[in-house]
Length: 237
Ligand code: UDP
Image (cartoon, rainbow, N blue to C red; front, side, top):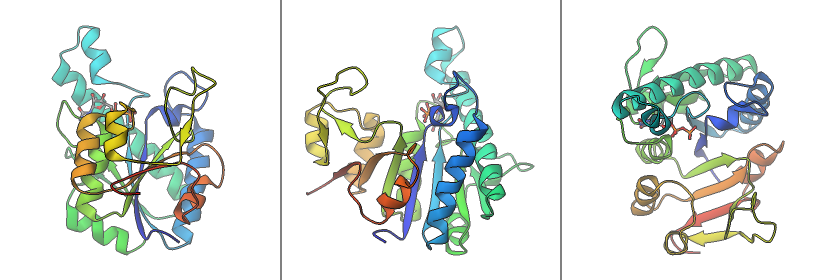
């Protein structure tokens, strides 16, 4: 195995499956199985889940909802997804803990770094909810932040696309995929890996990011074992 402790970033939209919003239970249990497979191999798994399938602050703002208020709605949406994911992973037979950046004692533990690390050491999957706990951020930034805090070796960004392309592969059939790319090149070429705040934070802390297709069975395990199936963003290649 190429990694021991990883942070998996899943967007809220990934949980929609073929739906337009909300959570697809089938997709949820597929993800849970994928995650169980790597936990069984001794990998320590932390997850940051997004909330875009339920609410996004920016789109709220365009519909007359105060931006900060909307961002809190978005953060609470990630907690809903976190609970769903927790339930699915536990149903697959793996112990989990949900830790949130906004306190909600009845449903989740508050985020405490040492506690998160201890859970990981004990083989529990740790799900981080409520992003960074602050408005004007994204769950991508939360993913980088938490990954650095808990000492994850890599961020695995599971998407429905199999990597980073020079142009949007869903709009252009001649799009070319990168196997690997430096932070600098990704930035200069204006490639959308993550939002700029998240990207800058990972670059500053030399945290590699692998973008891969999470919707194909077995891919998560392949990435963990070092197979180059997605695109790796790193300092030097
Ligand atoms: N959000 C926030 N602060 C954070 C993380 C998230 O305010 O640290 C809000 C923001 O409004 C965002 C929403 O939560 O639009 C959902 O998160 P995100 O868009 O990152 O989810 P994803 O795109 O991964 O589904």
